[in-house]
Image (tube, rainbow, N blue to C red):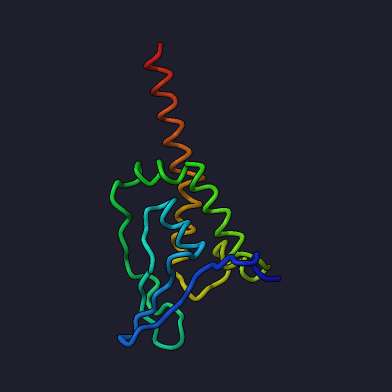
Length: 142
């Protein structure tokens, strides 16, 4: 199987300095990152051979606005559509779906970290945050 016609998951390029650049405008994964987490593409890394991320554990920062800002983005309809589009383009067969879910190693480990962070925010923090905001608004109305 292949992704839907015209769908591009993630472009990969390597520059002369040895940096690997994951993502470009028009990539479904980059649209997801931008709309849901406020993270711009390309994601930069270093590869010693090929395109595999040589330093996936290197720290990187959350975008401006902190978790509250991210939750505001990550819980919107535009984000849900971007995530679904990226998942369709990037997880189109069993192997790529395992990579998307973080069950198998892919070339862009940082990409997998961002997807994992998004899922964790959806399942834990943002859902809890939305519940707290709802409780506060209901309490304020009393």
